[in-house]
Amino acid sequence: MNRPSEPTGDPVLEQLASLGVDHEVMACDPALADTAAFCEAYGIALEDSANAILVAGKARPDETQPFALCLVLATHRLDVNGMVRHRLGSRKASFASAEETAELTGMQIGGVTPFGLPTSVPIWVDGAVLARDRVVVGGGSRDRKILLPPAGLLQLPGSEAVEDLARSAPPPEG
Image (cartoon, rainbow, N blue to C red; front, top):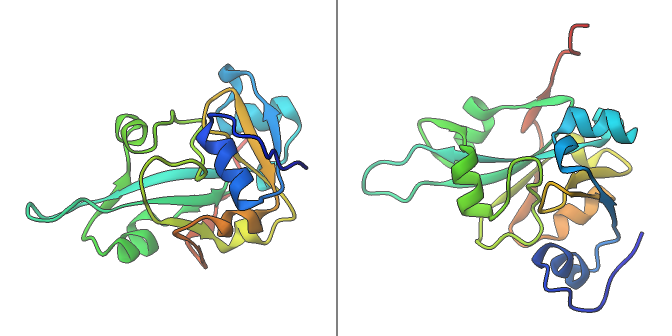
């Protein structure tokens, strides 16, 4: 694992370095950036892959729309209409669209990471993610991923561990 110390002009790598988070940058074919394809192609177990999912709460007309970036294992399903909706303080919540995600994070689906976000948004890390020895998260673009100890996610400003943010998903039928 490394800690680059020189400025890179890359907000993701610069934040990793400024926080002193041990990590490894993994090159990724952009066509294989989506979780299942990435894990299969690069030999990463799904339970060692954490997805960064932007969730939007429904706001009243006079309120600002709440958002949160949730990190959950690829083997789990985010509890959007339970835990996430409740934490957002919204009567409804849904996955942000690809357009909303790109606008708020500056990143495309398949590359979204909690590091280097251009705006302040709460970052909620499911307890199951923190139970892993290491996890792979998006790298800020579809051509790379970041491998790190999950405790590094809690070094981010605005991040917190949330138990039961997601539930174990049934294995895919095959």
